[in-house]
Image (cartoon, rainbow, N blue to C red; front, side, top):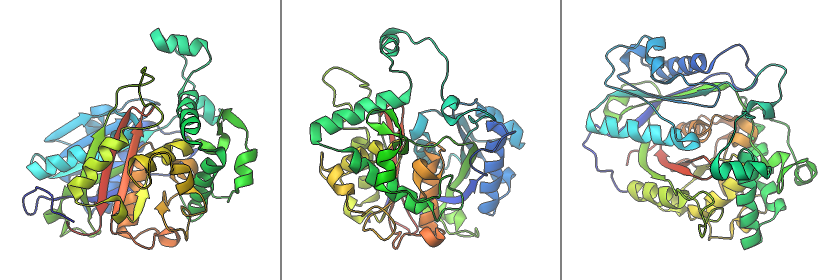
Length: 392
C-alpha cells in the first residue's frame, strides 16, 4: 500500500469507539444518546472528554442536537466544531474531515458522533419514519401517485436494475440471509434468529420488489468515534485503526431524465477515490462494510466498487459467498438489515471492530484492508473509507 501524503506522526487513526445500547431503548433523547456515545468513545480511547479539541455531530430524524452537544459534554475551547448532514454518508464524511483536521494540525483529538431516537413506545417501527408533510413540486406529483418516503423510491431504483440486468428477488434474498447469519454472533444485533431464502420470499411485500426482509431496521441509540494522530495513539491502550483513504460522491441527478439512477451510484466516484488514496485495489479488500438500507443497495454498491462487473451483482452475491465461512466477508455484524440502524455509523462501527480484531465469533478471517461505505438520500450521497490495523 502506498503512503498517504501526510507528515510523519500526523497520520490519522481511529483510537476510540463508543456504542450505546441499541434497539427499542425508550426514555432517552438523541442528544442524550450522543453524549453517552462520546463519553464511551473517549473512555475506550483511554482519553478524558476534556482531552477532545474537536467535535463533529450528525443527527437522525428524531431531533437535532447539533453544536449544542459541546455544552452538554462540558467541552471548552474547542478548535473544531460543526454539525454535519449528508444522511447515511455523514459518518464517513465526518471521519474524512476529522482526518484532514488531524493531518493539518487543526485539531488533535476529534469526536465524530451520530445519534437518533425515532422509536416510540406503543408505536410501530414504520411509524417512526412516517413524517407528515405536504410535498411540493415534483415530490408533490410523486406523492399524489403514492410515492411517499424512501421505500417506493428505492423500489423504483431496484426495479430499474432488475429490468436492465435481470437481477432477481432471490438474489436480494441471498444478501438478507447472509447478513442475518452474521448477526447471530453479534450481541448488539436486533435480529438474531437465522432466516432462509424461503423466509425471505414469504415475507410480506413492502414496496414491490422489496419484501420485509429486504428493508433495514429502525433503531434508537448512538455511536461515536475518536480520530487522532498515529503519534498520539501510540501511547493509548486500544489498537489504532489507520484511516488510509477516503472519498465522496454526490451524483445530484435524482430521477433526472437520461440519468443512470438505479444503475450507477455515487459509490462509483467515492470508491475509486478512496482506494486510490489508500493505494489498494478491490482485490485487496478483505472485509467490506457496506451501507444496506435495502438489499439492493448492497448489490449495486458492490458493482460500483468494482468487486464485480456492472450488472453482475446478482450472480456475484449468489451461492452463499457473503455469509460466515464464505469467500467474501460482507457486513459482518448483520448490517442495518439485521444488526442496528445507525445510518453510516453502522458500517463504520463494524469496520472498526473488525480492524481491531474484536469481532469474536463473527471475526473475519483476514482484516488487513477494511472498506466502509455510506449512502444517503435516495442514492444521492456517498462516502467511502479504507481502514486497516496496519500503518500505510
